[in-house]
Image 1 (tube, one colour):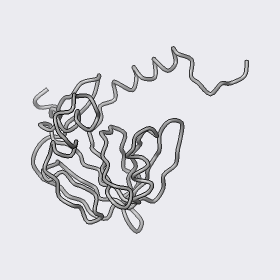
Image 2 (image 1 turned 45 degrees about the vertical axis):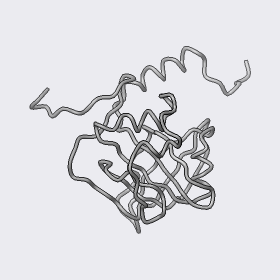
Image 3 (image 1 turned 135 degrees about the vertical axis):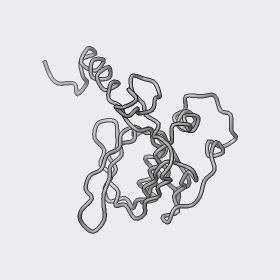
Image 4 (image 1 turned 90 degrees about the vertical axis):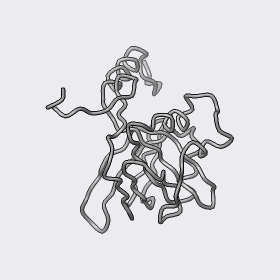
Length: 175
């Protein structure tokens, strides 16, 4: 039988169920520039390297998201790691709530990062990046960014998403 490029339904369902157990930080990736201002909620992000000219990180965004094209055209992005009390921002940028705001950016206070990308003023951490690479793999773009600036709030817990719900990490001493 020829390979159609689609996963068997049971393999896809098992993959999604398995990945739902992976605890991830909740992040808002934003961009601004000639293509306009965009933002989207993502869980897929990771450090690539702390060495070289600049540290690098990656994030993955669905090809159907307007943010993907915005990042490609603007050439910059800011990855904002949310604090535990910022799930409304995640829901808003993830399209999981009915629109409460005229513009989805109205759900938080923003400052301009050095690249011009919006940064949540009181996020836990933000990485301001210049786009190095944007490669489409399957239904998603894998963006690799050179980190130009890091903001850290030094207070708060990260918002975690696992088992299809929000949570916070607990130190072993509290578990």
